[in-house]
Image (cartoon, rainbow, N blue to C red; front, top):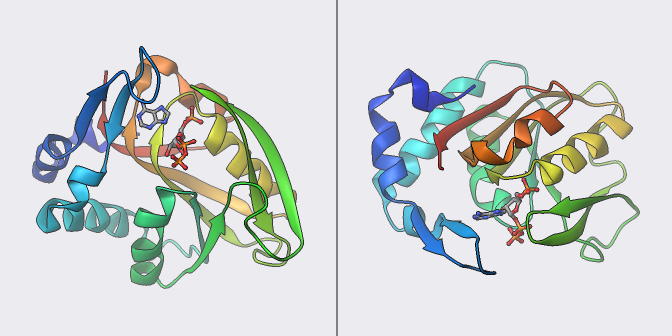
Length: 182
Ligand SMILES: O=P(O)(O)OC[C@H]1O[C@H](OP(=O)(O)OP(=O)(O)O)[C@H](O)[C@@H]1O
Ligand SMILES: Nc1ncnc2[nH]cnc12
């Protein structure tokens, strides 16, 4: 689902603050830069508020944020809905026992890890990131959570690159995005 199609008045303001940088980090990539959105308190707050309005009261006990940019949007959402925040990190960053999932990116390969014991069986989880491109990263995050028995209620991203069809890799898990970029 995309809030963009709902024509919420806040959406255009959010979209306008995302800078598109051609050919970064590699030729042919149109990089969606959310650091410019973070410089604008109103639009940054609108972004968080829109997610909080959607997920408050949905009995979500864990917000899982994906390194690095999911660490910007995930924690304020978690605090506002009364959920814990669990970081899903790149390899060798977490000090405790972890489970790992490898995945393929638009511009390379990577791996996500989660601390064993951070999420318990039957918990209701929301996965948060800034952007879905090919969907490989979100797919790895969903797998990590489901391996420990959690129910992934939805994935939430600020931006979707719909041309890359990442949604189709989420095995039917719902995805909610605020902005589509072509
Ligand atoms: O849908 P996908 O094709 O998997 O791509 C989306 C992922 O790519 C970006 O992160 P990146 O891997 O560049 O890491 P970073 O946030 O640490 O820079 C973005 O923040 C998502 O996490
Ligand atoms: N085009 C893009 N912009 C920003 N982050 C990305 N991650 C994968 N593709 C991306």
